Length: 260
Ligand code: COA
Image 1: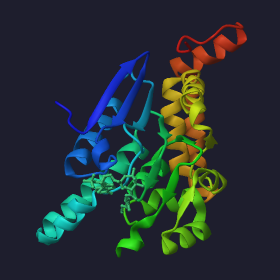
Image 2: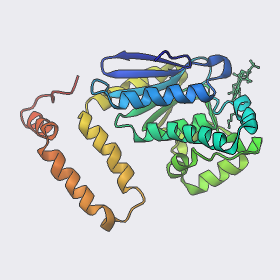
Image 3: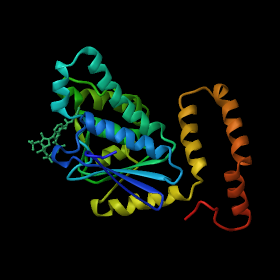
Image 4: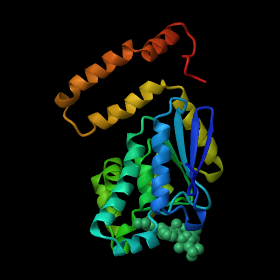
């Protein structure tokens, strides 16, 4: 597929996916949503890809939904309007549900859906000075399809405050509330992202996918409801070829086969 809105670089098991619409600050229009979703879904199915890194070309990570496109939706039928909203929801779910770890490299600004994309990622590193905000209410909208990723991440209290005020806040606060895992000087951004990627490459590929699914399954559930599932996961993984290799490697004081 020829990509117009997204740029991809692949090497050493890492897929770097760049939102590439800098003239509109990487705002999501229909084409961006389609290309990004398809690209991320495809990487999820490829054994050779171990980690996905998401970043933005130009001065900002992502300015959220394309506001001109959102305005134009008023002329759509209700059905088409719902279909477009569903496509956006599917994009965030693709990140959340991907068997690959997705790392967000965030700079400049991450607003609305851009902040939602950060919340859907597994690991996120932001440059100090990056502006965040769930600014939808300022436009008479709500941060709807991103809310299932944002609310668990930052908690109900912070979500109420930030969703209702629509205020912009900086990377330090984004870090304090758990929206990003680290806020670092801009000149260190790439080095810190690479360090996170290196950590992820030490982990067994199947184990990473299973760990991501594990968090999703147990979050917000009663222990009694998930215990059987957790018992089965460890029983399956420790007897799997990957689990056996990891255990053997430790006992033989060597790196496992998947480690670079
Ligand atoms: N949708 C569509 N176009 C957008 C956009 C968006 N979300 N965000 C920025 N753009 C466009 C601007 O209209 C402008 O287009 P123009 O050159 O044709 O006038 C261009 O991108 C550059 O925007 P500008 O504001 O000059 O860039 P900046 O680098 O000074 O600021 C932002 C970047 C992201 C901080 C700022 O553009 C912004 O606040 N955007 C709105 C974000 C928002 O409210 N998103 C909520 C989505 S629900």
